[in-house]
Structures are given as structure tokens and as C-alpha cells.
Length: 379
Image (cartoon, rainbow, N blue to C red; front, side):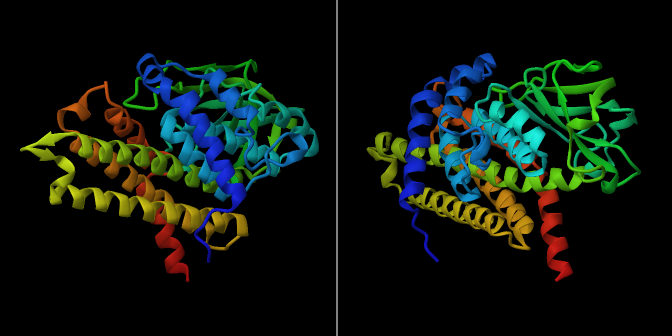
């Protein structure tokens, strides 16, 4: 058991950290305030191989593992949480195409996905099925060489801007076995988008409904066989949960560093705040819990790479713990800044707003507990 990053992993970490510091952090506040979707910045990230991190090299991917992916997203999120999280979604869809697509689909989509010439969104959640994802109602009915799709998806990151949408749609009966994964391209007849949602955080990425009204999609756009969509969606979420844990850890690390520096500089009652033992203890607890979250994230990533039978449980554990700790650390860091933490001149309030949704998406933390408990009770 070796807790030291390899030379290659350290190089990857340094590359991602430098990119986040130069291309993301200086602009994150403006992107948040003006709701700017920084597509060109993400394409710069793609030039470094960050749009197809776990995609094979044949079609332009970086062919890295889940541990390296977690390292990357921790660093990117320290620059801009919201933008890093969208890159995670794009990477998840690219991996789904690489893993479950046929040769024609991989050749058609992956070279453009790995460069972010085209941008991808993941469409599972519906207005009536959030946590109960297998109850989704969007339906695709076979009509010759096409599916005719009707229904809608809610809270879709990239909606209206993305070029392709990995849509979980019902092609069979009720339950998870009736769901297929179908790629819907922007411009498809019958595809439209709802109004942009006004959100607490994650403002550097658009979020809206995706609507299908007799939307015609070629059968050739289905990933895998009919009825395999729910399994594809859940396997995609294993990686997504590791990445969102990493985004929480990276944001919280940035908040912790800001709090540590502030305690050293700020003086009250004639001495630096860093000399008050009560505040030292709070900083120590923040650092300890953050390190525990990072270790759980790495263990989950290693389990996915190894094909461990308990990988899904480890991903749920890491996601639940890291996102809870991430929010707690950011909130504590804001408190340690006092009134200054509440101002938009400092990044703390943005960190708190951005990480809060991590406890909800990629499966709520309540659902993570259900996944863990089910696995434990089956043993």
C-alpha cells in the first residue's frame, strides 16, 4: 500500500494545477457573476487531454485511470468548481461512448469529443423521477430505422449549448430493464430546450430542461443494446461520483488554504487569529477530514480501475463523505473569515454556493446511503 503519487501522477497533478491557476482561477468570479460558459477555456483543457481522460488513445483520449482523473479534477476545481464539474460530465459521456459504443459510433463522436469540438451532456433526471431514476417516463418508440422520442429531462448541465445528449429513454417495459441509452444530436427534429434555470451556484454552466416532442433519432445512435441503458447510466455515475468527490475536495482545499492564510494575517485582540487555540483546532479538524475524504476518493478510484466487486459501494461512500466534508470545510472557512467571507470580493461565498449541489447531484447523499446499506446487507 503506497500513498505516494507516482512520478507520472505528480506530473499530471502539476499540469492540471498550473492550468487551473492560469486559465480558470483568475476568471472564476466573473464567470459566476455573469453566468459565462467558458467553452474556449474548456477547449484549451482539451488540448491537454482533459476532455477524454479515461478514453482510449485510438480516438484521441488520454487513456488514464480513475485515480489520475480524480487527481485532475481536484486540481481543476481549485480553480473553478463549476467549470471543472462540467468537464467531469463531458468526460463521463465520452467514456460511455468509448466503453459501450460500437466502432462506427466511437469513430464518429470520440475524435470531436476529446477535442471538445462537440460538447456532451448527460440526461437521466426527469421532473417526476430524480432519485427514483428507474421510473423515468421519456419514451422512444421504434419507427423503422428511427426512434420517435417523447418526454423531457430536468436540470441538464449544458442544455441548449451542448452538441450531443446521452439520453436514458424507455424503449421497453417498466423498470430499469426497459431503459436504453440513445445519443440525441443538437438540431434533431423535435428537440428543444427549456428556459435557463436561476441557480444558487454552478453559474459558469447552463442548466435547463431538454424536451422531446416526436423527436426523431436514428436507431444507430443507441449505445449498447435495447434495455442496457440503465446499466450504462449507473456505470457512468460510478466515475462521475469519484469526480464530483474530487471537485468537492479541490474546492475545499482552496477554501482551507485561504482560511489558513487569513488566520496568519488577521489580528484581533492584539495577536494573529492563528494563535488562538480554538481556531487552530478548527483548522486541524478541517485538514484531517479533508485528507480522509481524499483517501476515500482514491480508494474508490482504485477499486473502479481494478474492477473490484465493491467498487460501486466505495464510489457511493467516497461521494457521500467527500461532498459532505467539502461543504463543511468551505462553510467553516467562510466562518473563519468573518464578515469578509460573506463578501463577493473573496471566493469563500462562491465556494459554499458551488459545492452545496454536490450533495444532491450524481445521486443524492441519501441515495448513497441506500446503495451502501444494500451492499452491506447482501453480504
